[in-house]
Image 1: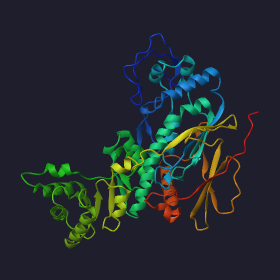
Image 2: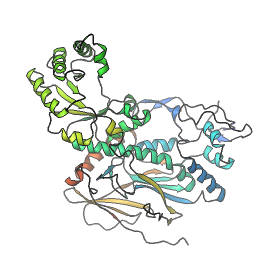
Image 3: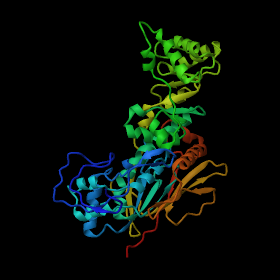
Length: 494
């Protein structure tokens, strides 16, 4: 058994940990001995959300692009790997037509950052193209730098310095792909979800998109949607991993299971579901004829039936018809849930209908037209000297930055101001610093887990409430507030 800190040699042995574990079928030269340190892992522990998780699945070293590690190898060889650098995560522009975005993924990134390592199977794979010095560096890898950024749940706009990573070039470059993967995905989902929450008003939304995306992306999407204001998810792993409230009752298959020569089995299906789940359950009434389905639902559960769900057809028309029918049957408190290819525009169109809640799937987990937030991660400072790209349409502003947000006395936002770090501008109006410390010396210094998720939910709600009314429009338009960038003074490298 290998214990933490013990040096071992790997010659292409089989992967010990289930995820992530590198690729199978890799041929590593038998004479390549890789000294490495195996971090302690394995077993079961409580997650930050209070649930039991299998820690053997954590490592994540191979969740990166090859060129990050070839750059690392070259920098180690020429001596530049230790230069002090600052990288910045930002979006050059918001997705087409969007007026704001919602920062999400911070807590998942911090968890990945503290667990990031390269196990013996990963190093065996990397020995195909990396030299022994680079493999030794990765075997001992631990991020020891600083991270500043916007708190999870903050709104952001084009040019917002959402995250700033400070450390040696070597440790900062290793993080790039993993960081971008988490933030581009989670932020895209949260931003779409926030638009849906805004469109729904005070009616709750349920995330139901697990079958429309990758199985692990589904878990992250459920968390991001909940962060942005959704009431819950159908995904059990999101409930276990992050404490997201889980909801769900039955699908059309259960009704079809009870069907005989005709659709008379629908009543038997409803009675079975009510017997198992109680009268407060939600019965799916559109497998056959909606009007007949509603009548059978009330017959099966009585007037205290919790809800009926409509998953197809002209939802606005059907909602009115079903509400009238339920009321005539005495089920005046029975709620109506609608689902079926909903997005923010369809939800907004249903605001006048007697709908009580929405189930959203495909549009949500694919970002509703913007599947990635468009974040980039760029080097902005080397040894205290600002650096920037001048590539056509891909320019970047050099130097470490911070940001604050200015509002009227009423709380309505006016503008965002981005300025050189440590040199805040003089602002007479009410304002709030957005850049906060997240990691110091490799240690997380901000709240995490369930408490942080609850705070992020409040932050999104507060942020949406503070936008000028035109900033909440779903139609294509300019960002909700302008961003003013204060350029730093040029500094000599001497």
